[in-house]
Length: 281
Ligand code: C2E
Ligand code: MG
Ligand code: MG
Ligand code: MG
Image 1: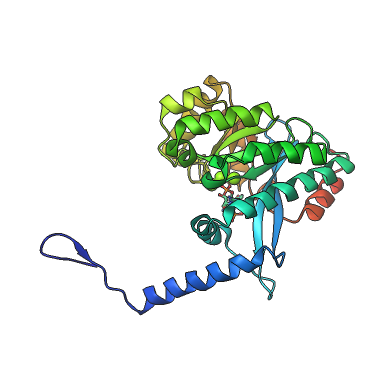
Image 2 (image 1 turned 90 degrees about the vertical axis):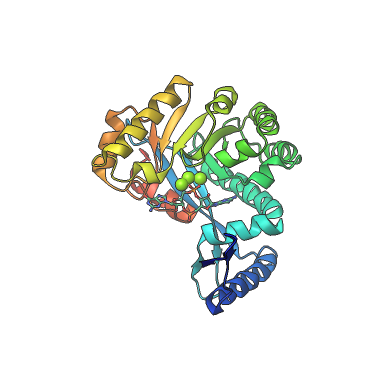
């Protein structure tokens, strides 16, 4: 990257960039068929109450399986789905599958466990979401609180009034709302104050080494106090060590999620490990 005399950068479109661009194009093409070919699946990761380790909910995480059994990183293909609009039908599929999986939880005596679903801005702001959630609830007999939707701050910042209204409608439908990756999106406190929310999820970046890193510790304790002050429950993301868990517990953080408590896995495996832990989840 060089600067032109007038200050505008000259972008050299070199071979690597071309390869990257055509890689993206190829990926976008394959994504379009992936939904029809049923190549997507959901993995689940437990979210546990810190006080006693009880599994409160499972976060549904989308996986795209390749013919060789490998997975394309989710953070890589989601943006492509958002650009192409595929995220709308794909998001509907995720919700439908999550509702089906909730039914399997109920059948296994985990009726109180919620499923958390990530929702993109485009999908969230599409006018059909409350209606499709209502249909889903009726079709699957979902109890109130069975589904939690995870939204990022960007959704709110993009269209604050529309977001607030949609959140209110969804909560009337019995759906809980979380702000995901909290702290990474320059949320405005003016918006946050007025939103009908249930959970704040502290981004993994701040939870990393929170017991050692003074700056992360300052941010996490401030976010816990902020959330509690607003009447919200706090979930810490990316907890990998027992030292992190102990620090968060001592600070009054409500729930946590991370490799320490379980890696994302197919529902069957998650339920099997819950059974092994003897009903205590
Ligand atoms: P997210 O919602 O913040 O999900 C948490 C991510 O952190 C997941 O990555 C999870 O596998 C990973 N993770 C969990 N615990 C740990 C840990 O202890 N350490 C580390 N290093 N990582 C941990 P994943 O599954 O690759 O998903 C990436 C992102 O893709 C998600 O971030 C979410 O924003 C998006 N995503 C996933 N599924 C969906 C979906 O169904 N719809 C939409 N719109 N987005 C989705
Ligand atoms: Mg999430
Ligand atoms: Mg997150
Ligand atoms: Mg995150």
